[in-house]
Length: 134
Picture 1 (cartoon, helix red, strand yellow):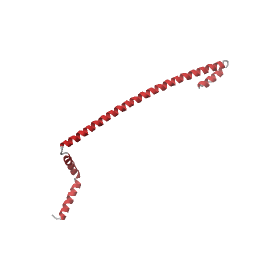
Picture 2 (cartoon, rainbow, N blue to C red):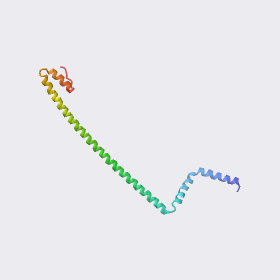
Picture 3 (spheres, helix red, strand yellow):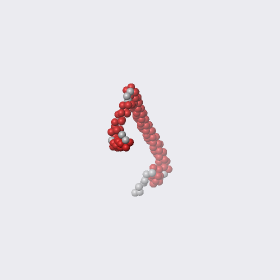
Picture 4 (cartoon, rainbow, N blue to C red):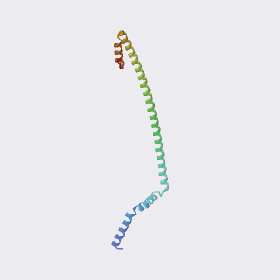
């Protein structure tokens, strides 16, 4: 074989490899796997370690889900308690405000017994209500 015929043959092989590279890769992958896994005991230990790692990952995911659910429930309880406390404080403040207004209305009535128009004007100013003219 001459150098020119060898070069031509190699160029044809290279052209064939470029055209059918998927087949070559498909053949080489199982070949590499077979070379790596010839020793069955090594493969078993690798698979066992992979299974243990997977089990640990699943356990961590479950634990984080439980922690997140607990935190969500606790946040909901805190929210409900806070809203209830605010509503109670608001109701107490409203009652105190009403008592102050009642005392102030009694004072206005006592001061202006003879002048109903002045009583109406002052109570309207105190409560923020509008008075209609007749």
